[in-house]
Amino acid sequence: MSSSTPSQKSHRYSAEIISHCVWLYFRFPLSFREVEEMMLGRGIVVSYETVRRWCLKFGQAYANSLRRRRPQPGDKWHLDEVFVKIGGVQRYLWRAVDADGNVLDILVQNRLDKAAARRFFRRLLTTTGQVPRVVVTDKLKSYGAAHREVMPSVEHRSHTGLNNRAENSHQPTRQRERAMKSFRTVGGAQRFLSAFTGISPHFRPHRHLMTAGRYRLEMSIRFTIWNHITGAAARVLATA
Image (cartoon, rainbow, N blue to C red; front, side, top):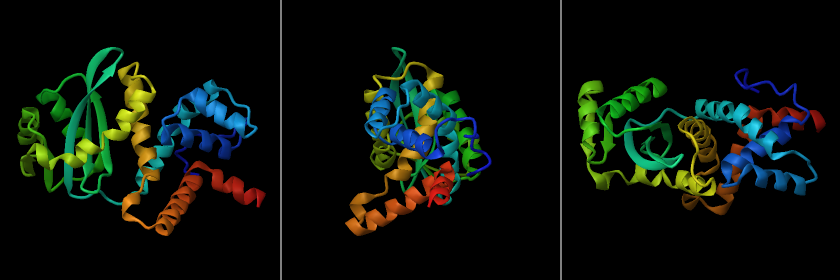
């Protein structure tokens, strides 16, 4: 297990059980209580509050480990923003994906102005450590103003029809938002989505482009990676 992953030594449950609960919560539109019920169905008694603490403690670390294993992002980035209701107030979720649909970063902000776009551009450059060749956005004027200031040498294409890849990437988030009956705080939304966008896509290969056999093989590989970064693999080897 990566040294950056929080220690599991003080926990009564094994790494295999912890990682399974975290996987269930971030992979499927389930509540903590539903994860508790599913584990009870397997004969494992764990409270929903314990599942919540595990997701807070390990979710982001697992997501970071998965991101480090991804290939370098493409040089064409698609940026988009959607509104989300948080605590009954309208906020904005900014998202960037590469040409393959891999999520580069997300940021929850209060506004859609130039300052918000500039903040997101700078965060993207820091997070990826790269400068793109092309940035594709919708017609929001804030993008153009921030682009000229932060990355003027990068080509900027502003056209709604070109940005379907970024817009489609919001669908899993919308699904979770409905299941959770909206987010309660900006910080909570940012924490959840940061872990969610690192874990969920790992288990969502482009299935429509694969044969059934190729899909099963790809998922087996991805579960092996998951078991390795969560420490569950060591548990399996120890009991083999």
